[in-house]
Image (cartoon, rainbow, N blue to C red; front, side, top):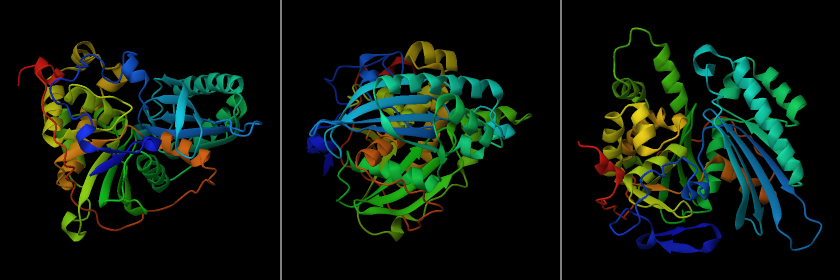
Length: 399
């Protein structure tokens, strides 16, 4: 099987990072801390809104500059890239603001004033940076927490008047389309079918895809921030987080893998799965694909469940806004991997914002899909295994 890395051409799975011994360990470089490895990564999803801009060059042959702001339920991300073709691009600027827009939306139905103030200030600062970078032809899309907030219009008006962004709410189906576009730019989807799971703070999009498009897609109102905040509001609940999350996931299904013939692989996107892969594998280059064996995901779940949030921050060097959501995220990914009978999970390190970058750079018109496209998925069995390294952070705590 071959996996394609954007414009760099197909790469055999034997050349991917699979956690074998001999790679440099990255203990402490887990999706945070500002490490060089993480700064080169493409980040993850938790999307509420994505703002896109294209710099139109006056010089023929000059790269096209595309910018995206991914304002998610758990954080707001800003990235600028120069495109020299429909796929090939170089990231020239990126920034992440730990603003949890999903706070209170999933339990009280509205964005609180303080969170809106923080978001507006972040957007205004992004506007200054974008003006300095000379970006034009703007697009903004909104989903998840913003879409569900009762005071959405007030928030959108503040972003419009105080920061100069027009946000366009989109559906979960459109999120799935953008993720498929991003994954297709890095993974060769022409051989068989793939199950894609894109997990954010407010929702999870599950799709069956091929190189030709999306065969089936469903958006579930299950996200990491939503799970945490709902549990916090569940007074009198004495279940552990692990038990409670699994109970919430029990009703989520996909069509039987046996009903769709042919080989099917499993890929997962979002900032949490990238952090999980860094914990599970001895080395992970964010510019390449990673293959995470399902049993390594089980080991990460065991590790995280045995640690408090402060311990995850101190011992694993996770950001505070990653340390509290990573365990429920791991449980969600494991649930769907189990439904798909996946032995391995491909982690392409792309998400919605990369799909938006590609969409705008290609000059495509935005399409807002509504509803779901149904068709049954199949079983995921990527072929490359991952061996445990003696220096993996999973060995830092007894089982």
